[in-house]
Length: 205
Image (cartoon, rainbow, N blue to C red; front, side, top):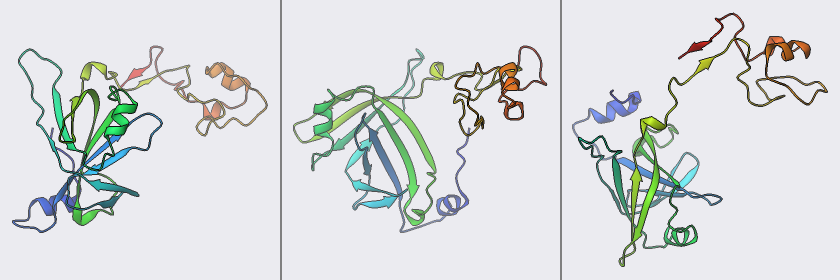
């Protein structure tokens, strides 16, 4: 499936020459810590309201095998300023932490939507003597994704938060069974998050 990119990005991609590079961004998210934000560039940049620090790093291609194994990606960052290594020490390598890879264009840093993004899970980490940090990343595992993505039910409310912005109930009751009958008891059926008009087993999408 082809990537859907902005009109600006298409124009830049089709240029024969340009002095404005594409930038690879990496965001490493450890629990209860400020994310580490790195850009493959010669200087720091500001994007999406945050500062992304210039790091030398390399990202391998996603390789697939005939045995249908979950593909892995290798990311190596040279942490000369020791922004990452202390976190690795504190979290025992940070196995299971999230790592986002994004691509933006340097000429359109005011566009907060990346041209490409993908989330990985850190499954292994090693630190070299030259301040290199090698992350082994687990690529997307389709078996972990819900399919179908959505289910529309006849008598069950899809809103998870009672009195939340979708629910809209502002009365004195404190509990809701998330059924149409209960919603009608609360005189809130106009905001019911189910679909009474569809069939008994619901609709999948």
